[in-house]
Length: 188
Image 1: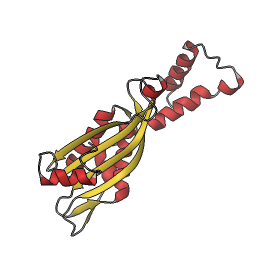
Image 2: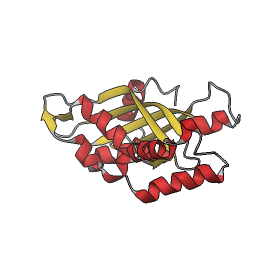
Image 3: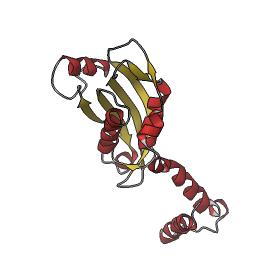
Image 4: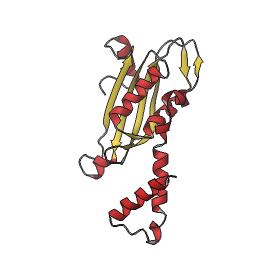
């Protein structure tokens, strides 16, 4: 852990008037610094690294993996946002990813200070650029604690973002099929 990180957490807490000598608080700066290093560990990893190898198959249709859980930190308030990622992609040359690789890709982009809109875009773009798929559609459904805790939205509020790239971007049959795999175009 960088000493600068530890000092920064200490200064923040002391600046807020929190007594770091109180029994339960003595190790808090170290715990917070360690936690944030873990939460931001995706900054030093790439989508290509997360996706790894592809597997040959005779499957030529769309592949959909839904309800991939994620936890991230909003770069505006450094508060958590969390939810599910839904991915549809069109393989290239019959090559597909192991399903766990898609979760690893989501984690790379979730584990950095993030905006939901960029998060959605980064996953879709990485699938095409790093994973060499013909096209991808990604939808993210998220709950933002900064908005909930400030009382700006109701508890049930969910933000949705969607990005389509490659062959799934233009309007047409393939895009419609991808929307169905995401749960139907009435949800988007």
